[in-house]
Image (cartoon, rainbow, N blue to C red):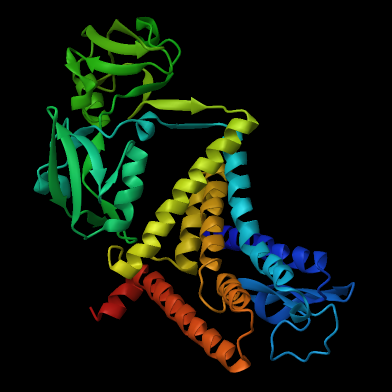
Length: 441
């Protein structure tokens, strides 16, 4: 049920904001609005005010604003308050307002999320230095080694782990060039990211250099007695650098050293220190009495202006990734199996809701950005398609015939139906029992 309610909340907000943009700019330009609907199909709830019928309809997969004289097929009187009676500039404003509202919502949501503060993995904004290579992974097969610095991926420079991840995700099962710096020299390899999870997310099988971080210290524990504090980054344990440990391995080592004094190297406020910790035996194993994270974190508490700037940067990076993904669909660099439909969105929204409101709003921002950009694509029937037709008519200084417009809209409808069939098939294929049914096994 969490997935369902999260899906309805996210989609309801995004559709409302989108249609509100069309509605407000239509009214601003003096266009008579006949219907404002959330959802399609039979109307479940409705009321009329100011000549506009407001309703909630049965199928919650979109919405619409119906304007007087909106298409050439509508009954028209030539009145000044009809959509087609307005200038091309006024019609452009009405059409662009829906996608623009989704883009603004994405920026606003991420500004609010950033402004509220967050704790993030420190490695995401650091240079992508390979700390570990998983055995049998795509990276090992390609010849990537620990200590390599990844310089570029898919012929584009990468500067951070986050930037690298954004480029790897859409390229599962595709041969991609990767350039690394090793010992001062550049080396180029060809790598095939492996598809991970049912969403077929690209993965190289590498990880950054990680050091455990103390999340909190239990009062009266061995860790407190040794002087460990929350926020300390453990860079060595018992004489060995922690970049060679996983967190589970380190905890296992602690378990073997009950009653023994162990040197622990830490970074505190950028300064290196060494403490002596003596694990205490608990239930037959050594414990230091501290909760550890697998990686170092950074706490972000920006002001509003900084949060807004961070939001713009994040949305721009997402836009670039979405653009590359769309281009990749046409060039076969991105698998169409990565596209998600209503079921996939519901699962993602439900998962985010279970984490917390910040994760849910961040997910909503990403989906809103996708919705806004998708609607700006020059496909007839979408807002971007209508805008493109307006632009061409403006440049040609004449309007297309009704027959030509009908053909263009039918072509756009067919393309949209193909996209919908693809994403629905992907959603159904990710349901385990349906996947077995579809594959005939």
